[in-house]
Length: 373
Image (cartoon, rainbow, N blue to C red; front, side):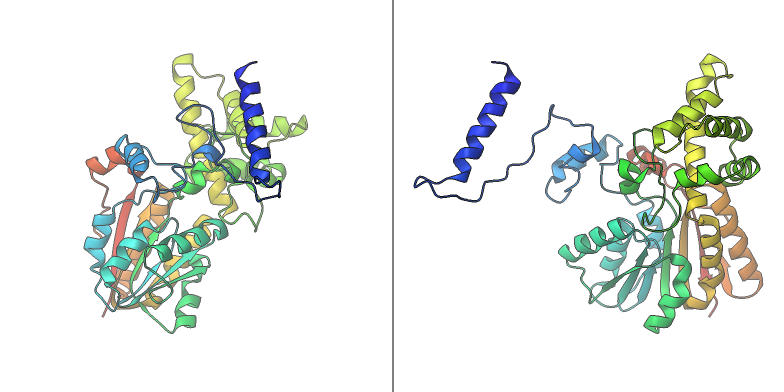
């Protein structure tokens, strides 16, 4: 009898025993955690310890110490720099415009010391619900935190509905690690999954749908404008060839195959790294497109001065040059108009130590502004 057969027989025996008591009556079977092969499962769905960090803190700490981000969670970036600038005081009202995993929110809530309120916005119905529950379990309930399933372009509606202007606002424009790590969301070219890329999978068109309908000129423009892709024309040509041959581009790995095919002309020593970089840029360009990220950011920036209280502070984390340019331009224009009394003279970057501890922090830039009194 081989090991698999022995395990199956034992499992069947256990199930029979659990369904009956000694008198032969039926009982509710005991549910055991599914067991996986190996001690370090690589599949996202098998990483049960990393999906429950509060319960398996030692495991999570080991992953973080090695410079990794545990699956299913997010390591907040530049927390010290953000708190040093925002100068949060008990009794104030704040807004986390991009709630995500809630790491920044938690640290800001601590600063309130039980007095005041924070509103957290997120368009992701899956992760925002989990974050609300996680923070509530840590003592931050509805009396101090309100989570709204809302795009941060609608900050004026939040201010109107609550009757509040905000003493501090944070916007972290990065994609949460939980979204990147979950193959069902389609944010990563490294694992097989549907080519979705929507922050809210219940609304709008997926990246796969966009690739079915976009014309060549628009796709080239998208790749250049959203991610400065140097091989935009080559990638677009292969996308169009696949469409003519009725080959679907519906998964993350199929899009990666397109990029691999498009870059075959490169020297062998350059090929692997070039494919990696073009995959990152192409996925970024599509994500920005399907979520209208530049349009949303522009709207958010235009509304910011009107929702900040006099002397209110805003900090924004960006992760690529297009976002940073928009933030820089907006802050400077409103400073010249007298709406901001002070803006960051230059970007603030995470420390070298933080980048070692969290590789996803490397591209981060922080800018800030202070509302005129």
